[in-house]
Length: 553
Image 1 (cartoon, rainbow, N blue to C red):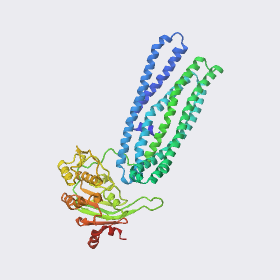
Image 2 (image 1 turned 180 degrees about the vertical axis):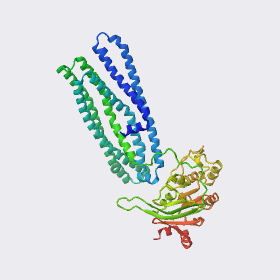
Image 3 (image 1 turned 90 degrees about the vertical axis):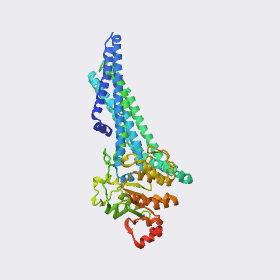
Image 4 (image 1 turned 30 degrees about the vertical axis):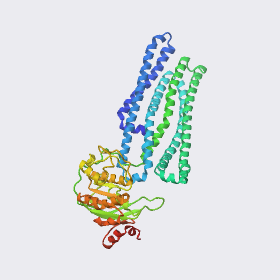
């Protein structure tokens, strides 16, 4: 199974050490049975003198068994810790377009359900490993006692296990369905949480969501998890009862047909009783391992970036004077038989310290251009140059770190960070706090924001503050002023933007505030995936009424 393969690849020698401990535990278990057979069943008059060694042997068996289980469980938790960290790092390294295709619900279900399933499987892994090893050791001991009895018993146990594995295969089928349903349930949870205001206003929609959307997914999950549990319980009970039946078969062959004496039959039965518990535990652990295999399959289907330990951190960027996009094109994947929206070819040149505004209607490609410019999307054709040096395949992580951005769907972090991830410059931070009118609103403690209960406009100011204290070279603002009150919007264009120019910050702003377009060095328009610059009368017209310009066919 994938779990064992991955563990052996990353923790080979610790895993081998744990396996040796498990082998010793199995040998001691068989040794206890042999001790009972030799000193407490077969040999007369030695029971009293054998009691003390017997107690010592039991104590040693307890210590080794517990030690092997704890060692394997500890190893498992270390592995899961590493697996979770590697998965998160791969998500951080994966291109945004792939993450958007997957969706947050799918990613969250993998980070929670799938990692949890692997953790549970690792906790149950000792039961499977020990069950297999103890079974093999017991078979060897029974072969030494009586090959004929072992042959019949082996056939009996083989049939038992084959039927048990068939039942377990049914568990696998239903677990796969429940895992697929789990992702849909996460989407339902997101809809309920993020749409809570609309659902409170429209109870018909709330009823439909609960009874028809969530209800259908929840019923599917319930029905298949019940079936999985039914097959699992059937496999456990089948194994348990058939092992008891094997003891009856042994005594029938020994006493009824004379294949062995009573002492051998008793030892055989004692060994089978000893073997019964590990086998039941192994069968009981199998569904969790199957679930882990399903989770590994789901994690593989994510098609995330390969794991890399480093973050491609950049201590200092070289000075630059121009950034140029040459013949950049990008096309979204086709959906439902419809061709995906395409952008480009785009040709754009930005100069250091320049302030460029972009307008365009909904679906015109503005946000796509912003993601292409910042390197979040990789173009399908064309090239980006910094001072005539092409940004190569290996340079994307470094290229992105030239930008700070506040997108319309920005995430509100709770910690301020300066250049290279250090503390923000105190003087610079204090200055921007005053300028953005956040000094009295925010409570900071060593760069951590303690109070994030802000209005949307204040949240955007906080996001801009975080971008500014990073001291990056290029600032991208996506409809940043849309949620600001008229007074602060005026201050932003007439006071903050000139300060950005003085600091040498290049600003690329998506905006429809036509009254302030005169402050831009250049005005660009995105229409149907095509970019063009507005000059002369066209710019003057857009500056008087940007909305009318957008709606013009």
